[in-house]
Amino acid sequence: MAEKLATSTQFPPHVLLFPFPFQGHITPMLHLAELLSLGGLHVTFINTVHNHKRLLSNADFRSHFSRRYTGFRFESISDGLPDDQPRSEEKRLLDVHASLRASAKPALKELISSGGVASGGRGAVSCVIADGILGFVREVAEDLGIPVIYFRTVCASAVWTFFSIPNLIQAKELPFQGNDLDKPVGSVEGMEDFLRRGDLPSFCRVDDLSAPSFQFVLSETRHPKTIGLILNTFEDLEKPMLDHIRARVPNLYAIGPFHAHLRAKLEAQSIKQYINLQEEEDRSCMEWLDRQPDKSVIYVSLGSLITVSRETLTELWHGLLNSGQRFLWVIRRGSVTDDDGGEKFVAEIKEKITKTTAYIVGWAPQKEALSHRAVGGFLTHSGWNSTLESIICGVPMICWPHFADQPVNARMVETVWKLGVTIKSSCDRVDIEKKIRDLMEVRKDEFLERAEKMANLAKQSVSKGGSSWCYLDRLIKDISCMAAQKSI
Ligand code: UDX
Image 1 (cartoon, protein in one colour):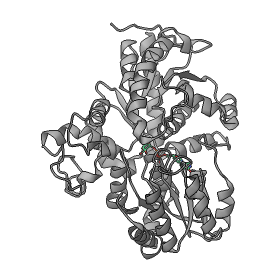
Image 2 (image 1 turned 180 degrees about the horizontal axis):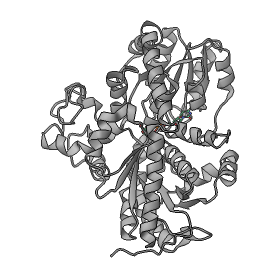
Image 3 (image 1 turned 90 degrees about the vertical axis):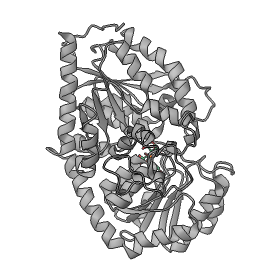
Image 4 (image 1 turned 30 degrees about the vertical axis):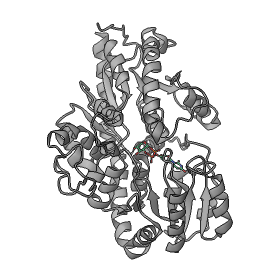
């Protein structure tokens, strides 16, 4: 039975956000939380204890939130895993999810129903924004009679492929018969002309639909009974797919790119400082970029989760060298398997590069690097945050998708938006060199021209009166209406 909570109109509407505890989910959700706070809402942001400790160790983070936002509060809940267990790897997704469900679900219910989050000049929670792969957060909110809006960290096109999984099963396109990943797929409406098996979310590559990873995706991505869905995308980029989703979800808020939207809102309030909330960055690469010619550097990064073998990185290394281009390469600590996390590999190749043509860091200020005049291309794993960051900076991409939504993102970049090229996961140094030359030399002008046009549309969407700006206003109004209705 629903436990109705008292609300009061004397406080601003109060929204609670709960991201899946991976970096690629926390960062956009935090940007969303800041946008809502700047819009006048009270915000509670739930972190796992493990991640919150990491964020608190960042002095910028502490001062940013304590100085800027009133009515913004962090709460932390255990993910149920031992302190020393590694978490941020693609292969740990299901374990982290299962442990979180078992441990955080009761803790979240207790936190909200005890009134703890509503104390100290804040009203009861009027709306919960749940990460789109955290069904248990919706279950808690429903039990407590609180409306839920989902936030998916992936693009509209990827959401639409997830929504289409039942159609794929019904049409017997899933599970795949045979190993041909290039075979066209016909049951994702609107994508019939370009989608292939290998472009579907990687979880679809199973022989048996009862596989835990497939069942996880099937159950977590349906979003039953949701009243709304927030996406980190913009209308001009994904209108056809957004229209398909609109037919299924009553309220769709396409308010991205979040990071640029947040920057625009802060600037509108004459607030200059915009901090990066991620890992420790090596900013020396920005000085290195300052010394490079315009559009001459390819920026290389595979995001925050992927691990690759030493052998694969060796192919990438030779592909980069043989292309003759300058490059800035992020090799994240712990991202190289069959090595001591990458330290040996990095030490070896650092000995071989000359700093005039290449630079290697463990973590870069990526958004700044992509907006630097010297960067002319991005070799990316096609994570959605990275893709959007590249789009708004007008940087063409070489997509090297590995898992989850990344194959769909790469297909959209190459075939629909025509903002880059793709390399297959099984590629070698020769393929990599060829694609880099295509992007940085052979088709350079063509790609740069299209990328600049799309970047302008992205910037317009988050400017006053732009589509993302207006959707955000509507989201804030809708949440305020929910709060008002609860208090009647
Ligand atoms: C994951 C999935 O890979 C992605 O497909 C999904 O959409 C979200 O979750 P992740 O692998 O971390 O995310 O990739 P991505 O979404 O691209 O996010 C990486 C973030 O790390 C970006 O915001 C990027 O700016 C940041 N980053 C990366 C840095 O700030 N510095 C770096 O050196 C590398």
